[in-house]
Length: 215
Image 1 (spheres, rainbow, N blue to C red):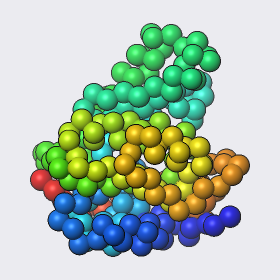
Image 2 (image 1 turned 180 degrees about the vertical axis):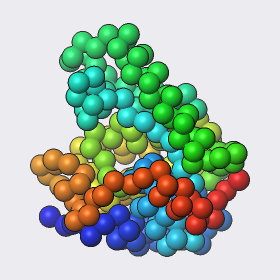
Image 3 (image 1 turned 90 degrees about the vertical axis):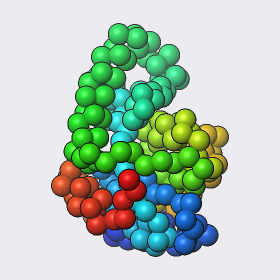
């Protein structure tokens, strides 16, 4: 299985695959924090495009937080894994409680990463949504739906690694899905990396500060 040295290498490889979008004034790269920002930073650099951040939070199942029952994104967007919700008979009360907790963190990150800058205007633009990898894809689906509400010309999902079924599902909501490695069976995003160190808030702020930010 193809492995990446780290998120920087993955972002550079992704940038090469997305070369058709290079040098265009209508392209905007949005990294999903935290891990998608260093990948997105390299993609934006390769395409000579601006970089910003789109805050999205996974809704983890209580007691099994790594299992996503959905996700929330800036703009009040919530996407639920209806199959999982039905299978586990999750109550609306449980879902609403987890949602409220994650919205608090979402708002904290908005203040932390964006300071006083407004969110970028995506209307009429080609928006490339970048993460360091996907498992269920719930978080990215929420990101796509959040961006869709703002009238972009095209939404492209770009990730270094994800399972085939997740890429297929996202192709139903995005205009294009670019995924470099699609392991099967898929166990974890981190297995596609030699270095999958945690990305800190300060790292996100630094990378966004380095980039050409859209006001």
